[in-house]
Each structure stands twice: as C-alpha cells, then as structure tokens.
Length: 181
Image 1 (cartoon, one colour):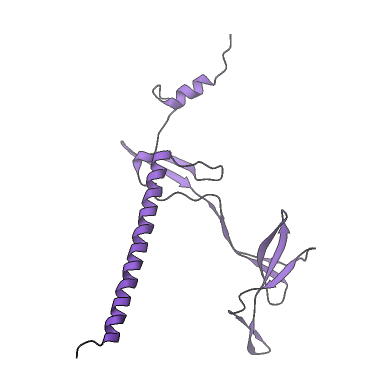
Image 2 (image 1 turned 45 degrees about the vertical axis):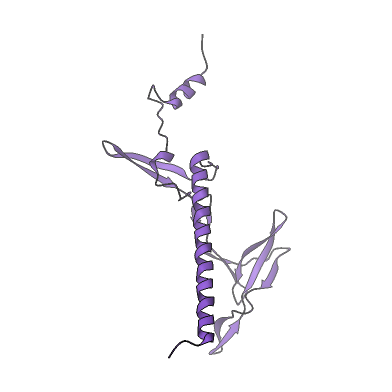
C-alpha cells in the first residue's frame, strides 16, 4: 500500500524537525569550539576562588602529575528550624505534591520553602519539614569549577621554577627582592 498524502506530510515535517535539531546541535558545537579557541588564545582567568594546584609529583622521568582542586562541595543538612524576624514561607511546586503518612493514611503535602533576607536580598534557605520543626538545606558547590574544554591540552600549561635560572618566575622573584647595601 503506497503512503498517503498525510503520511508524506508527517514524514516531511519530521525531516524538517530533525534538520533543525541537527543545525542547532552544530551551532552549539561551533559556539563551544569558538569559546575553547578564545580561551586558548587569551588564557584562562584565575579567580581567587578558582581551581588550585594541590599536589605535583613526578610519575616518570618525563611526566609529572598535577592534582587540582576545583570547587568545594557542601553536603545536604537537616537543621532545627529557629524562626527569625523576616522569615518568609512560600509553597513551592504546587503541581508536585509530596507524600507523608498521617493517622495511617498517605496524604499529600506541598513543601514550603524558607526565605530569609541575606545582604538585603531575598535568599532561599531550604525546605521546611511538614511538621515545621526542621529545615532541609540542599548541598551546593562553592567556588569556580575547572574549565574542562582545555584542561587536557599540554599547551595550556606553563611550568616555572624558582630554582631554574632560565625561568621567568626566578627573574620575577629576583627583581622584587630588596637590595641591601
């Protein structure tokens, strides 16, 4: 049985949708590649809370290992709720009830988020427990994460040593030393 006109139309729509998705993916990949090239060209920023070198060691005569720490993870917390002036409770996710057992029956409840004024900004602290006695504070990552698009390229690294006469680091250190005379 040959395809109907409606089926042909749906196939055409599907091909157009797939072509749009492919073009969007291509553009995203091109944007990532351009950002990667720009980072290689200009160098990565080094913010105070950015990745830091934790350990360097030789693993072979011509290979060194560098251990980096990027960001710090804070675990989830469940803390007693102590009301403070200005606390605001707001019902969240009204379309996604949670469930709890009361009197032997499963009942729906909607989580309430606790907001406080921190540095003159309304800040979400966490979710209040159904009985209102505890606050669940979600874990979070602090600090800048590692720029993963170029981390595996040896060309992005510069090794300097204060003990090496050819090193720029040694010249910089010596130029900042005070002269005594």
